[in-house]
Length: 151
Image 1 (cartoon, rainbow, N blue to C red):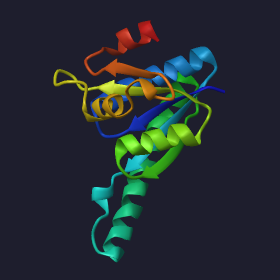
Image 2: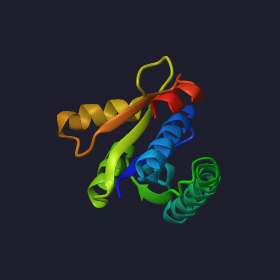
Image 3: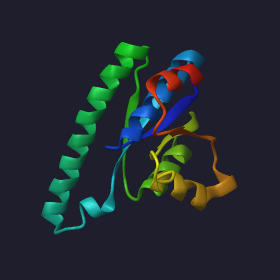
């Protein structure tokens, strides 16, 4: 089954990317994989403090996933899966795509009005034409209705 990979963060653009991925997965019989990333700067402290911070970051990701998972199941009938990785965002995304051969499309949300955003920029600049899967970039200013109509 082809999966749509979406990177979970606290941005409003994530919601657009998630909506697009859920609708496309439902229409195409695919799945959605949500990637939560624990950034290195979140745990570069003393060992004991760093481990506690990693555990708290993991719990935060899992709690956010529960909310978004319920929405996807209730609204689109698609049950996503969660993957958590540690590291720099663009590297973690590429590692996940390499690790899961079922990932067929990376879906990212672009920032509204201030350029595409750091992750979109990093992945395009870092990998360019060598990306192993297509990237769908959903504009941050796109309305729910517009996303539904193009999905």
